[in-house]
Length: 102
Image 1 (cartoon, helix red, strand yellow):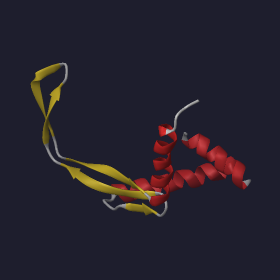
Image 2: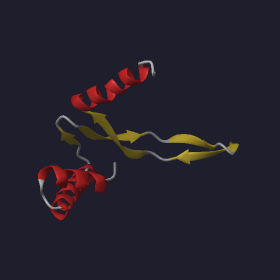
Image 3: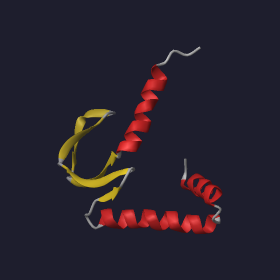
Image 4: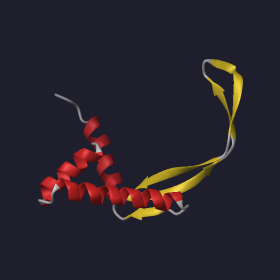
């Protein structure tokens, strides 16, 4: 699903016009990005939590030339932990895939 797909789906379900929905979705994403960019986490109940984590400096290797090593600097990355509802829905995918087909 793309952002466009999401906008169309929300507009169809709510009766709002796509321009307004696009603006709300984009503003929501902008605020999430700004909070993370300011070093703060974002918690969206029933969806998940975005947190920041420092990755330590480490040595990497080029798979095409394993003898050459590269120093990878420390950096901050975004981690996402899904909420309960998302974990349950995604967890059901395992149950579905384990059922015999045919």
